[in-house]
Length: 150
View 1 (cartoon, rainbow, N blue to C red):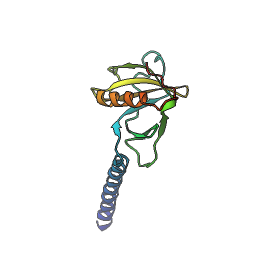
View 2: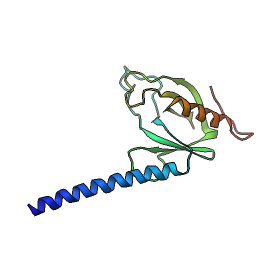
View 3: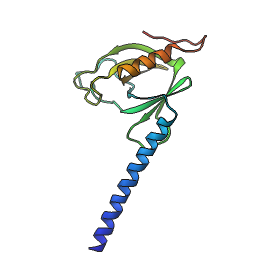
């Protein structure tokens, strides 16, 4: 009986510590400001075959402006480092669309921005307000930098 209580107590303590670390990580990412909720689909298919991949491949995360880069962090991760880094000069906006019914992982009011980054097709899903800020940041590149916004 004592062993069972010890094991249960240890499991509960580990879960609580994990949640606290998880929350602290998010606060550290957001501490410097310039963050917004942003889902990412890296290497997105141009035209899904038979609808198989329409709603697959999305990762929910937080994006953070850092100078001429966007740093993207997975929401459900303990890593303090960004999973992806997008450089402003390498981002080309190819279009925009609304989420398909099969893309349930996205928030209901998200807008999907289709982009190319160094030849890789990716999709960013964010709120309308975040999209306005993102496009303004993209267009505010220093003189001499190439920025392609559709």
